[in-house]
Image 1 (tube, rainbow, N blue to C red):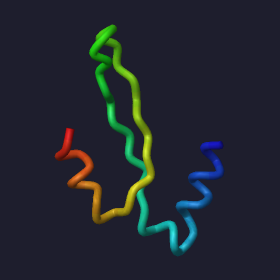
Image 2 (image 1 turned 90 degrees about the horizontal axis):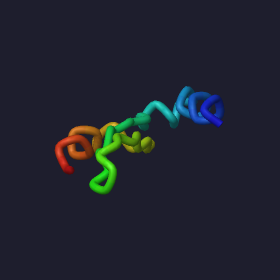
Image 3 (image 1 turned 180 degrees about the vertical axis):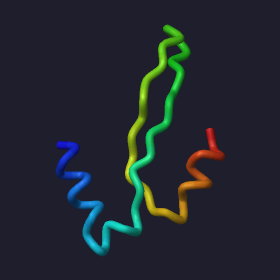
Length: 51
């Protein structure tokens, strides 16, 4: 599945998007999980500035 996402991002229209990974701490267990999303390049700063 990861290969498909990477291949999609290499197309000319895919260069406007980025795959971002955020580490999120679980309030119940305290363990960290990783949240992956594909967002537009213009929204990257907003994505990481908001919690």
